[in-house]
Length: 302
Image 1 (tube, helix red, strand yellow):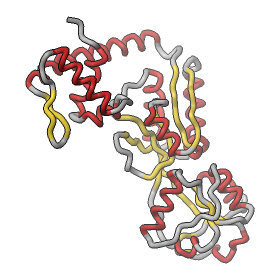
Image 2 (image 1 turned 90 degrees about the vertical axis):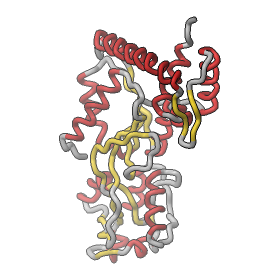
Image 3 (image 1 turned 120 degrees about the horizontal axis):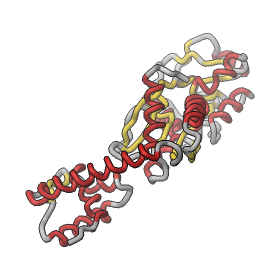
Image 4 (image 1 turned 180 degrees about the horizontal axis):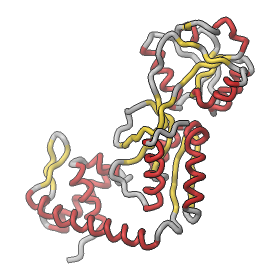
C-alpha cells in the first residue's frame, strides 16, 4: 500500500504540536482541513492514531509507532533537500520578505544591499507597508519572514528575534514652544492636537493601549498612512507627532522639530524578525535570516 505523503506530512505536524489548531497554523490551512486529513489517514491505515483530550490530542500506541517512522522519513527528506541546496548553492533562489516602513528605511536597507552584493543571483521579493501588514503577510504564508517595528511579545505562534531597540518620541515644531525644556505629562501632550500612525497599525494600538492604561483620553487629530507624513505634519506645526526617534533624527538635528521631554517613561519597542517557529525556509531565506540576526547580535544599531 502506497501512503499519501501529504497526509503523512500533516500527521507529522499534528503529532509534534499535539493540537490540530496549532498544526493548522503551522501548515497555513484550517483546523477542519487538518481533521479531515487525519480521519482519512486513520481510515487508510485501519487504526486510530490520536486520542483527544482537554489540551488537544495525544498519540495512541499505534500513532507513536507510526510517528517514529514518519519522523525518520521527514528527517531524511530534510537532509536530502539541504544537500541538494548546498550543491546548487546560492546562485539562484528567491526570498519573500515583509518589512515595515521604519524597519526598512532605518535598519534593513543597507543589510539587504550587502546581501545582494554577496548573492546577486538570489531574487528578493519585498512586501513593504506597516508592521501590521507585514505580520498579516506572514500569517497568510505570502512571505518567509518579516522584519518590523513591534512592541515586545504578544504574537501567538510566531517566534520573535529582537534585532535592535527602538526609542519612540513625541516631536513638535516651534508652534508648541511652551512645551520645550520641561517634563511634560502624557495627559498634557494629549490635550494638544497630536498625530499618530493610522488606526489599525501597531503604532496606533501601542499608543492607544498606553493612554488607556494611564487613564488618558486618546483622540488623534490626524492619522496619516506613513511615518514620514507624521513627521511632515509635525514639522509644519499641525500637531505633536509620535514616531520612532530614528525617523525624526535628521529633523531634530536640523532644529526643524524638538523632542518633548515626557514625564513618564514609554514602554520599549524594537525592530524584530518574526517567523513561524519550525517553518522550513529555503537556503537563501535561511542565509538572509541568519545574517540579519548575526549583525544584530554584533550590536549593529540603526
